Image 1 (cartoon, rainbow, N blue to C red):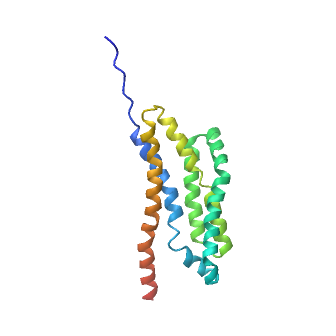
Image 2: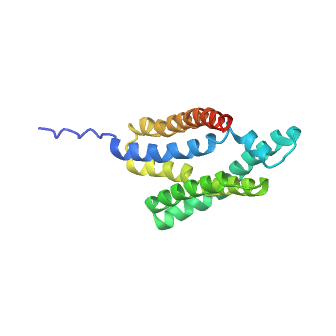
Image 3: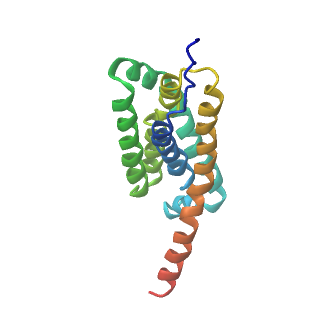
Length: 175
C-alpha cells in the first residue's frame, strides 16, 4: 500500500503575527496624512508652501526606506528575523512619537526620514513568509496576505485619526 502524502497547511498563527507586524507600518505612515497640513502650518510655514513641505516629508520617508532596505535585510540575515522585526517595530513607534512631539519643521522632516530609515520590516517580513511557507502550492496564498494587510493599514490609519481630529477641534472650541 502506498503511503499517503501529507498535505501541507498554512501556518496561520505565524502568518497572523506577521500580518499584525505588517499592519503597523502603513498605519504609522498614513495616520499622519489627515493632520499633516495643519501640523506644518503650526510651524509658521506660509500657506502657499504647506503642500511642498508635506510632499518633502512624504518623500523623505520613502527615500530613507529605500536607502536602508538592503541594510535591514542583511542585518536580519546576520542577527535573525525576529530580533530585527521587533527592533523595526520599536523604531516605528519611537519615530512616530518623535514626529508627534516635533517642535519645528526641521525636526518633523528628520523624524519622518528616520521613520522611513527605521522601517525595515517591508523586506524582512516577505523573507520570513518565504521561510515559514516553503511549499510552492501554498506560497501564492501566503504572499497575498502582506499586500492585503498593507492596503488595509493605509485605509485604517486615516480612519483612526479623523474622529480624533474632530474631537480635538471640538475640545479647542469649548476652551
